[in-house]
Length: 216
Image 1 (tube, rainbow, N blue to C red):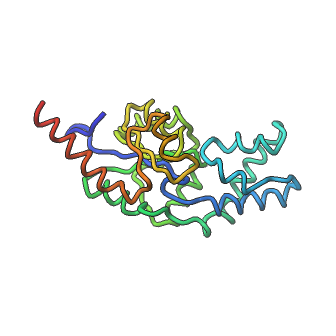
Image 2 (cartoon, rainbow, N blue to C red):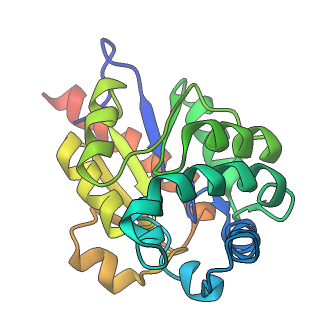
Image 3 (spheres, rainbow, N blue to C red):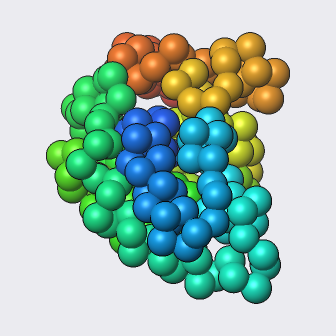
């Protein structure tokens, strides 16, 4: 899928470990949840496997009948503990600005609870034209299609699945739990070390797409 005059450029971005290093804030929130509930949670382990839905992670520490209530409490605690220690990853602002420089729109498609995702972006000074939360893997692909995204940038194997489901170019950044070789093996079309390499890649990608269009 490529941008056309009828379908302007829209680039989707994952949030955790793609745009933002949310590990310190997530760790702090899990420690607060552990202290409040009296349940031992290995917060250092949790932040090594970010990506899948919150409920999946909570099931490792709480019985099924408590998971929904604990998730609600986690999301409440998150507001008090997660934003201050979270920082943009290298190149995040420049990546977003690069999309806008090409006249494009930015859609943040994330597994995070949507209200907290919006607060994260506001705290980090990152503006998105659309934010959709509580999605994972193929369900991210549904949102990408709805927003007309032709590129999706993420750090997780689930993000690659989402891009594939949407027919979008799967751009992986090796800033999360997977290395470049694993991301390539999972089907990423492009693997970048981090977002600092994204503006140059995007410029080349769009130039190639224009060249193909002119020759068609």
